[in-house]
Amino acid sequence: MTAPLDLQQALSELLGDAQLVPVTLPQTDLKLWLIDGDNMDRAFSPEETRRILHEPPYWSFCWASGLAVARYLAEFPEWVKGKRVLDFGAGSGIAGIAAVKAGALEVVACDLDPLAIAACRANAQLNNVHLDYSTDFFAEADRFDLILVADVLYDRANLPLLDEFLSRGKEALVADSRVRDFRHPLYQRIEILEAMTLPDLCEPEEFRQVSLYHARRS
Image (tube, rainbow, N blue to C red; front, side, top):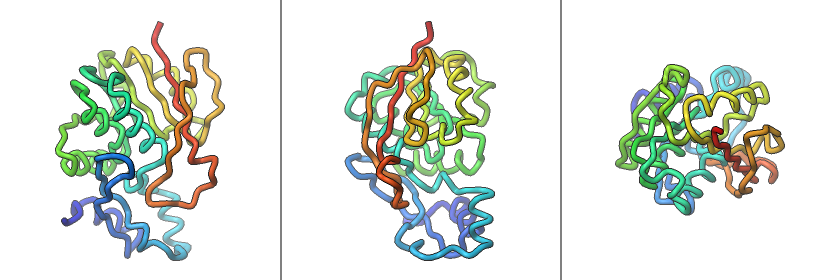
């Protein structure tokens, strides 16, 4: 199976020897095009490090919170079954794809990065599901039953977004392993899930504990 040309080319421009490979995610029936971690077991050059920091290919990883959400929706499909769902900051599209598999009526993968949208398209095709796409959350109408958010709060500067999710959806389900202690009057932590990032970044154990928060518009 050959990796999507546009994504492979973008990855090669960052890391010359990096390859995208189809990976079956553990404890799921889902696959994603991910960076080949076995081929990346080396030190990055200063120029590679600069490029990665400036424009990280986050769409080529399955982050722990996304994997946790995918497993959670498979176990509890009632969160999305028959509903209109928007996957905010979709990245690889893992949460949105899982929502389709769990019976969502409609899923919009939303991301500012055109490469992330391309990754969502490729991964939707890999899993034989249909997604719709958006690059502007605030251009979307207030018509969604649920906003899914995975691995967006890694930067505390993004915390004000918590107030915005319910401007487009009746409910929000937010998963994050980086900022697990945020306090917001509308959000309640409902679960702590365990997952890891793929390929394995050898992250500290604390980053494998994913907090899941729920909010409902009053």
